[in-house]
Length: 157
Image 1 (cartoon, one colour):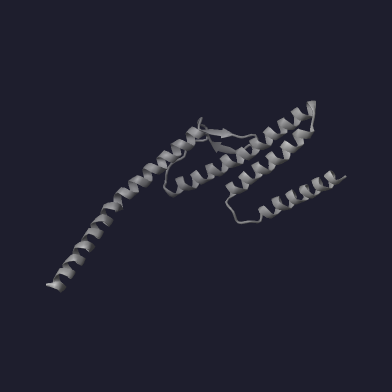
Image 2 (image 1 turned 60 degrees about the vertical axis):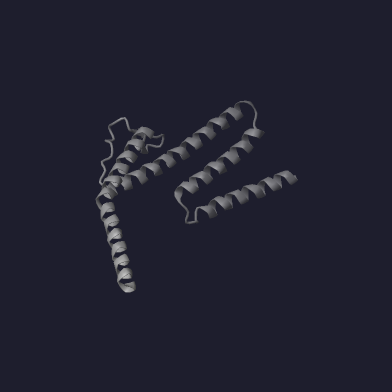
């Protein structure tokens, strides 16, 4: 009797924590990591109490739930790369190419190879843009240093 009461209290607390957590202004990836921990905790408990075919069914459900969360995480990473590519005017691979995958829920996301290609292109564009203004900043700092030295030398001399 006591175990079931504690279990119900634990389930209510888990439900409340999940609901409360969704209200917090945290990055979506943090929410997904919390979802993975929560699902692992629940399914480990269910699988420990199951036997035979029920255990196999729960293990399959657990794998599917983790697949859905992994798909959402890859979708978030793809969104982040798309925003960065738009900001730097870097073209994304075509959806018809092998660098995109369609997940179980129909969401399109970049494969690891496609994401790596977009990251390299963004890095190259950032590097190219920095090569334009970094020498000017170095020259400006040098001129300011020389002027400061001249002013101090003039005041002392």
